[in-house]
Amino acid sequence: MGEEVEAQMKRIEATKGVIGTLVVDPDGVPIRSTLDQSMTLQYAGQLRQLVILARSAVRDIDPQNDLSALRVRSKSNEIIVVTENNYLVIGIQKLPEPDVSMSRETGSPLGIEYPGWLQKEGSDGY
Image (cartoon, rainbow, N blue to C red; front, side):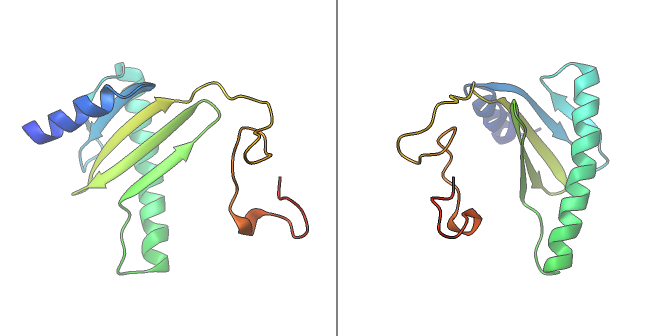
């Protein structure tokens, strides 16, 4: 990998909460990872399949468009996949423990402010 890619990977790895990074080649083979071999293969295989599905959906909606990034958030982690020249750059970040108290600013649990279209008519939406 080039020096520029290495520098970007080191910057990502230095981000608070990042627990792993991977680079996967166009054939689905991990070529760089900070995870153990088992986790590397699991993330590479599963996320490659997800990217293929997401790319297909984007192209079905607009054949002139293409997938550039994919963000998946679970209860404990957030995974960001960036596609570049059919390579996947994957970052896995542990989410901070949620504050289950009601947010004063949004009035919602976890302080999440939902878009207007998700709010129920005639309510505060939370």
